[in-house]
Length: 115
Length: 115
View 1 (cartoon, each protein chain N blue to C red):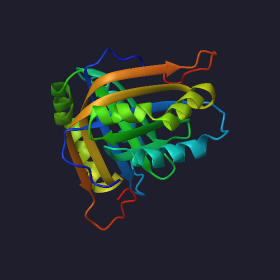
View 2: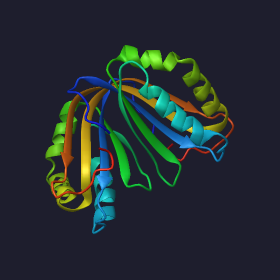
View 3: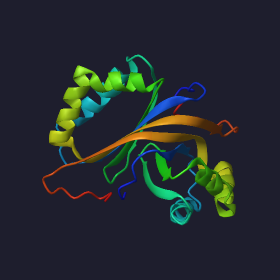
View 4: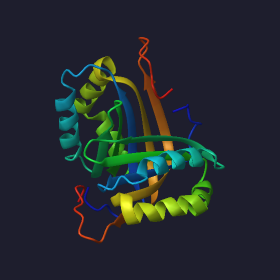
């Protein structure tokens, strides 16, 4: 992920447990990442899912208002509805204000795939 | 993860990219999760790592002071130092105040491995 601005900014911590239903999930997840990146106030995203089906996606935003606007986006609403009907067994969503941030990168030339 | 209290509380968002060095990493990671759970103000943790080596761990705490105390813990310091020397190519740590939280669980009897 690109460098973020100095705090304060906002994080949406989305933790989810997938069902076994794959139908359309991958396409939707990719589309939501691309669509979020076009929204006002979007700063970045970090996302991963382990072999046990637990996923954590953290998206970063300039303000709580920007997050609220993204939540109301029509295509995002449809994805959310389908997530509830098909893809997720459980999820938790938290909105948090980032107060401090610190990054460390190895200085020995190791590639950083997030850069 | 068990249910958390009503916000506000704090989240530490730790995003890391692993090196290829495995030596002791798994044991350390397990030990840190167990040790964190013994600290004052600890509320819970969610952690996952994908096949690409990107990991996200979010731990939850009652206050910023509890987080600072955990950061100063001697055994945690040693793990951090070894993380920098051996295990991590890059990491970012953010301290954020959770303002709102929302959980959804499928009502059809699907097991929730996080409960």
